[in-house]
Amino acid sequence: MRGLLQILKEVAARPSGAMGLSLVLLHILVALASPWIVPYDFKAISAIDILTPPDAKHWFGTDQMGRDVLTRTLLGGREALLVTVIATPLAVFWGGLLGIYLGLAGGRRDDIIMRVVDAFLSLPWILKMLLLIVTFGNGIHVLIPTLAFFYGIPVIRIARAAAHTVVARDYVLAARARGEKRITIIRRELLPNVLDALMVEGAMRWSWMLLAFSSLSFLGFGVSPPTPDWGLMVADSRTFLPLAPWAGLFPIVFLSSLIIGINMLADALAKTLGVDRAQKAPI
Amino acid sequence: MPCSAFAKHAMFKLLLRRILLGGLTVGIVSLIIFGAVEMLPGDACTALLKQDAQGETLRLCREELGLDRSASVRYLDWIAGAVKGDFGLTAHRNKKVSELVGDRVKNSVLLGALALVLGVPLAFALGITAALKRDRWLDLTVSSIAIAAMTIPEFVSATLLILVFSGWLGWLPGIVTASANAPVSAFFPEIILPVVVLSMVMTAHILRTVRSSMLEVLDSDYVRMATLKGVPYRRMIVRHVLPNALLPAINVVALTVAWLLGGVVVIETVFNYPGLGRLMVSAISDRDLGLVQAIALIVSTVYVLVNLSADILSLLANPRLRTSLARGG
Image (cartoon, rainbow over all chains, first blue to last red; front, side, top):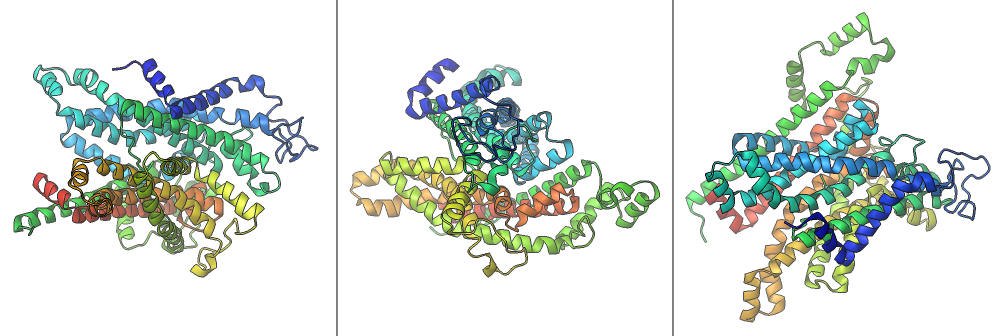
């Protein structure tokens, strides 16, 4: 198995990988540094500078409350990135482990859990998310476990399928014949072989999660105002978008570039690792 | 090859198994939905009475609505009603859920059907072309546009399209003003932009699958064999490649349709479209639990049905799958 650094190097050697990697890194950098580099206070409203077009004072213009759009756009991805960067590995971890376990164990337990997985997948993601959010609130302490839980469920399927392809191989049979414990077989034989598929899956999940998170914010169920967030900014700017497109377009450009960056990265990762990035619906 | 009685029997058993599994999934979903709503704080009475929900009033209300019965009795009652299409009254007790949902289902089906009619042929045409022109500029352009279309959130593409076609050009209305029970004709031309956004996402998904499925077949041994044998290119594509490549796409179309049920929520909200998705969002904000349960059950049943039909269809259409599954169970 190649080291993580080696994989990253190979990903960066592909044009789409280099592009994706730099977009994602740039966004992470901005998210980390933005509190110190933004020119204005993101809450500072102004009665005079309402919906002013971009100029030397406000590079990205101002919004309907006279707030600086540049400031809010730079800060607007922090919550989304924080939540998804924590929730994605969690989702891949629990979904991956359970999937590998089921792929190895099979039997009745596998049948029952897969039926429940199917049932969960047949409910639209937005319904599941909204139900939990209206019950427990929309703080990040709710959003992270919620996203990690629901986005782990499709990972179960992927990991189980990936495990199935190796479970019948001779080296797994040999390990079983040696009388290795199940946990050892998972750790030593299955995990290294399934890891590639899981990494690609993780990158994809990250992008779907960002999509879900910003859609929730857009619908008013995600980040609460006045915290700046791209989805929320687009929602707020919609009514006067033809008059003041800058208030919505800049957050749109930032959000889209991040999501496209992640997808390019996922694509390059899939090609590097030789995983077939089959296009499935992002349930 | 004539089907033997044994193969027919095995086939029948296989179909029956699929149908039973689908039914089981819907059953589990109904349990999940009922259980989840059960766990939410508050019930129909607290929603109805608001601050008066205490003491004797609350007890009487619960008695009247049958909420004092045990959860299992209420679950069975709910299922019995759902089978007959009766989901009780809305939280404000002034309308039947089935009536409210009926119009919305019709509108969402209209939106989805138009998007399918527009998107599926386009997706197949573009996917096939991209695969045949693999790695040339046409393929690269189509593929990158597809990635952008399927990864950018629906609310972003919807907002951009509204800005351009409604705000700047003024060609199309950017918002739907027709009421939920309006006749189909009232939705034109307002429905055009929502349909375009919806079919954009869908087209991208199906296109990608068609393309990769085509490439897989194009790389297969039997296609190479046909080429070496001197089968004319056009004939090879039509007779050997397309039938084998397009079959797996049936399942993806089904999955995409099912996924649309979720994505449609955002689109309906953006365009103020009176469909099931927007009703769901408002039901959740209003905490109208009975309505939420009904919508969730309807949506997941549709999902299971669509997938089941795709399974059966591809089973019937694909002789290889048919026999291998009949043999292996």
